Image (cartoon, rainbow, N blue to C red; front, side, top):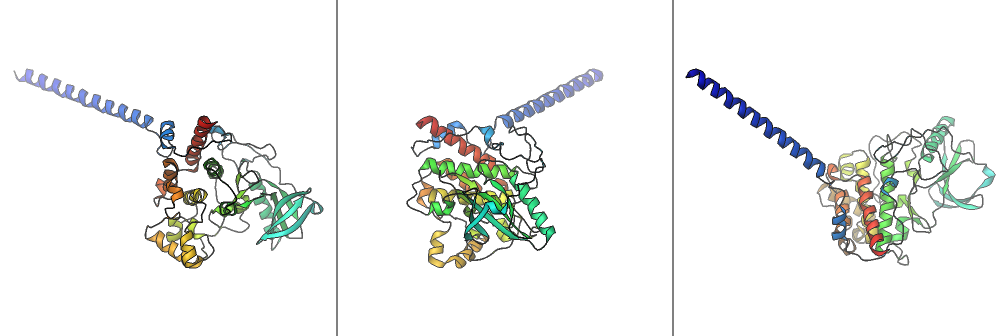
Length: 383
């Protein structure tokens, strides 16, 4: 009798063990399936795009395919393996080049007039160009600067300013020669009422900036230099196409360990809260905050905190911005109706980029993919 009870108990234990193991395996399989089926929270589905689109306007520009977000597009520049990060997911491959940036004859480059600081309008081969000049203290500094220029020039993306070459105007004076953008910086276009920008224009400009930023963030050891990203770093050509200014990625001197701020310089509005209040580095996550501010500028066509600047001045506004970001009241677009009337997907992108939690900010490639999908939806619906 005792032996039968022992056998029965053993059988029950084995059965219970098998049931528990089976339930665990089933739960694990369900969990894996749900993980695979769960959509990326930062990228909207086609159904969501249709339901969120609220502005009806034709789109007359061809949206490139997804594989073009970070792809090599120009045959005029050879990419180097140190400058390009290969990605099998996005169809990128690694490139290697040891070709230096062309050294242009000084008699072929002519300075016309100053734009600001050390940036000039000039002519090269009878075409307008932009020159940025540096006075190096010695030969070693100039060699380091030229090496940095060469690395930047090897980056290839349709929304990056093209660098034509280098010209030496003196023993230790060197200038980078880059393409000329007819309409200048993005704020000059946005703040001019005679520039008519439709929703498709604003959507395309937002996509162009996000795709350029996604490309830059894909580079190894990415660093943009001592300044934060602002809308002044986005340049516009005669076709209203936006390109990122490559000059801002040049660091002729050693990078600053902690960020430096200038009050009254109209730049703090684009600084991420963690950079401004905790002296965190200006990394790609901080630039996603800056991107959110610029996306808001594109649709509102107003400076961030514009009402505050008009009422209190630039310096007082910068102090208020610093305090607002400490107190978690951060609304650079000031709830302007132009942004509030945008499709919900766009408002969600801006809000996600402006999140105080860096882990909740989307990647630039996710933002670019979402904007690209909306562009393609407009093209499909309106031709």
